[in-house]
Image (cartoon, rainbow, N blue to C red; front, side):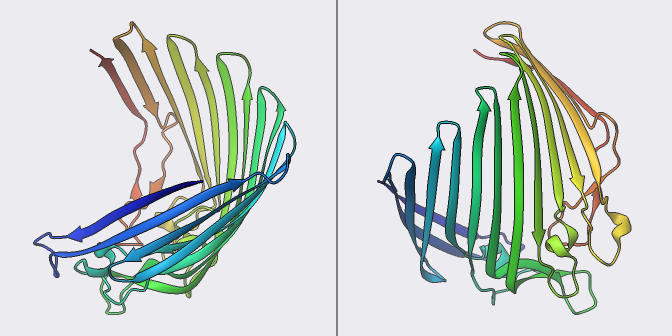
Length: 297
């Protein structure tokens, strides 16, 4: 059995804020244990107790059952509860703060499996469902301005799955590929997936080479079906691919050279980088370069 204690403090004291010198603290205790009740089955269970200075006491439980039919395969099923309190910034920041925010609670169900085809090839699969009550998000104010305010959504449901495959060709070369799918139910008058901010799917590919002195990584990321908000999809990139390559070379025990080419094919795509305006999308960097040296002494 393991246990722990956690203390966090969230404060805001900037002079530019409408309400200054606000702070909250949260004290948490948690325990977790593993019960191996047979050679093939085990149960991991835990409990977390939170005492929040504004939102009171909350208890969250978790349980995961594992099944290992042989030395190559492991299945698991889990259930986890959670409690998330609003931050001081979400409650009191000028313009977007909402002092009437409620805390968020919810739970997640997950099923997964990891299988070793051989010592060099593995596959990981998992699927989950999540249900949140009073999830916190940004919405446009109803005053005709471009300002946004934090608010609670009554219910938010999410489902998704992921697949990841790894293959070691030899001691130096490793290949990896993965796909992640997520769907978040839409809120009123909005697109699914947080008003189109989250993509429905993401692909990841990697080719890695690593020997004692030289390491090279070629990485690709494909964002698929990111709708953007209903009002002006022209400002978003619905689907795109970005490829990077990086390398480092160990000249000696104390000197290492490194370099990277980002966005090799100069893909034109956008990202949302300003959370206080859900409609703000900005162009991301085109092809870019970085070189450097690291000296350790």
